[in-house]
Image (cartoon, rainbow, N blue to C red; front, side, top):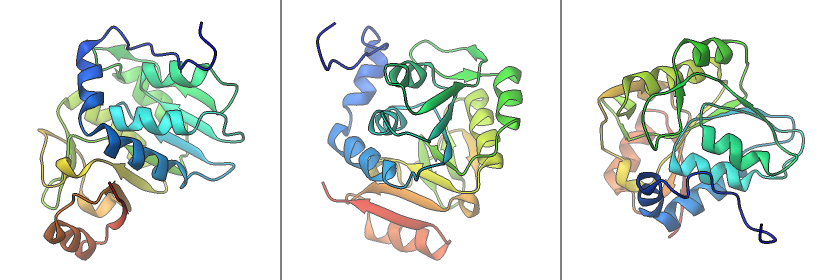
Length: 204
């Protein structure tokens, strides 16, 4: 293994790699900013996704932080460092390339945690439907994390603002903070603020 090389368990998966390359700079900056929100002693939830994977990388080496995730690749990413301590929910991998664990086992594990905050990957975020994603079973796991979290932080590049997936994670009133990039339209920013969502915007 080359010195300093990041272990990439998804390196053979074209689908994940392709998604990672979309808005790559934006995702990296969003993740770096989101990681600064995590303080010592936090227990956080990280859902599956390309942006949340970037958050996990930014948290490598952070002591006294505890991570709960349903993403197999995030668990492997963090296994290459002693910290943060990471718990995988367990569950069933239903879709190739998603790396997300779903089902009763995942839901039961999540119920045993109190999360200081969840960093939530989404397919879309809009005023009418809130945070959404594509797969119903995966959304159920994200909803369970939201229920256990004191703060809900959506990490999403600006292309997802105003978009809607078929599976609802939570309504807009549950979202405390959106970390996104400067490509977000002005009208969307104002509308989100009117509904009580704080914005943390990175310049790209």
